[in-house]
Amino acid sequence: MFGKIGTPEILLILVVVVVLFGAKRMPDMARSLGQSLRILKSETKALRTDDATRDPRPEDSGQAPASPLSPERPTGAGSLRSHGTGREAA
Image (cartoon, rainbow, N blue to C red):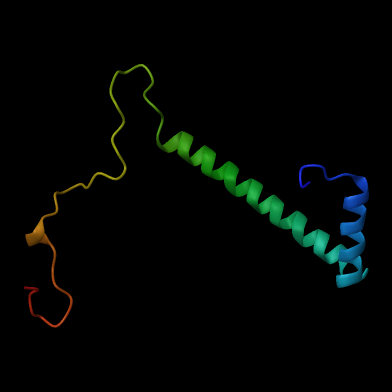
């Protein structure tokens, strides 16, 4: 039922949108949508280039890359401070 959206269904959706928002607001909405898509595209491209330049993957070195979640220093029960009333938990 939902897998077959054809031309009549798309035209019906467009008519409903024009009726709801009015013909005067349609160009502004299309302009905003286009600008949002351009921003999304540029940000994803920037993330890809940033990842490629920052962290090249060692493919044939035989070493596994370091986990980004591994802590730089070990944390234990003594390294955490209490930020409450000053009383320790029982």
